[in-house]
Length: 78
Ligand SMILES: [Zn+2]
Image 1: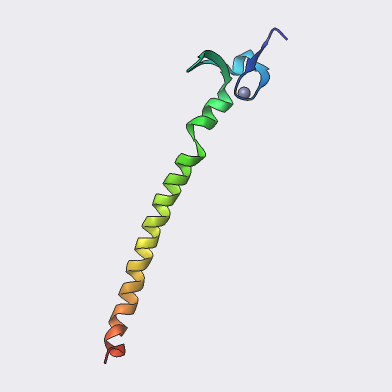
Image 2: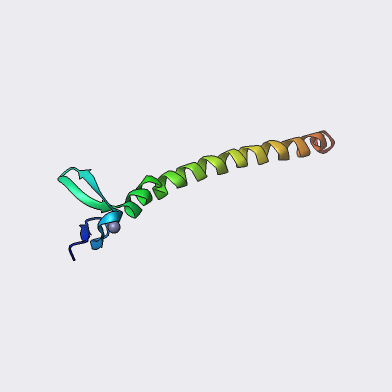
């Protein structure tokens, strides 16, 4: 087991080559590259990006709908 290190993130042992020292509030721990990469692309950040994109898409859709509906509005008004 000398070629593995304990990964505090996965709570398991990984091969040494996949491990990097990682500074935490309580000191340095070993973390595997996979968990560091996963943390870099945190789901909440991806969601925030997705929400911004959907809001933009929604606004575009509203503008397109307004352009399509507006010309007909005058026929509906008394
Ligand atoms: Zn790990």
